[in-house]
Length: 331
Image (cartoon, rainbow, N blue to C red):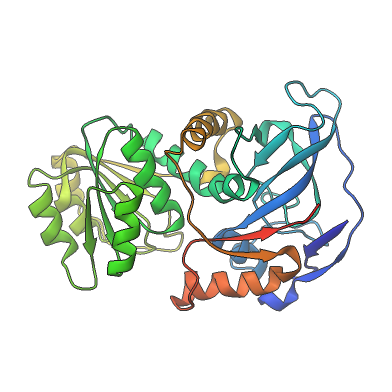
């Protein structure tokens, strides 16, 4: 099979494109012929060595895929050859990734693609959608509540905006330009804050004088003083980034408001948690309540270029790609 892979960590140019042996389907697995795979920031962190993991070499990166099952392993029920499916949580914790023509995946990480949904749409939704769903579930979002989403036009942020609306919440979100504010409005945000020319704290106080019920933080360096000031009584804050961050924390203000803090890592979720998320995601995809933002489509052979572009957007804040990068694999 053709695959994008590397044999040592490093810059994007360590990624090679060529032939690797076809994977064999094991007990409890399905073999999937991939049609589209999505690139996520964590893929670049693993490739660069910034996040150290034990990697089987040669190593195929990638968490997300969408395609068609071509073989079902022993012990698998509920799937058969020819089923269109999507999967995530690959390329992590010793599992080979998805940037290849074929992937052998444990069936517990595999979900059906709803009728009428394109493979690229399913792949682009996978990791970011599961992440958003788990975070909102941990925060126990309820209809009628107000949520502040930092970065509502980003990969995960755009999912949080749409899922919060699907749950009946009022959504305030921040964006870095008027163009991205319009994107957030189109996704369903009730209010946007252009942080380049508006105060997040000041504007949020105007929009939610009693505070927000949920503060979703996507930045690596949380400002807990601001966040706790903006939270309502018994407000909940969700953290999904900041692995090396060591910010100060105003304990007094936090506990007097009876707030709670929810940190989580998507790839540590249980198969049952992810299945619940996938079921909701599939319903919203089928009803067109959930739409991923796809910024660029490239062939699988351009995986190294895709990694470079992702790093420019994620780490350097440069480049012109806004939205998910999808690599497409012709049948």
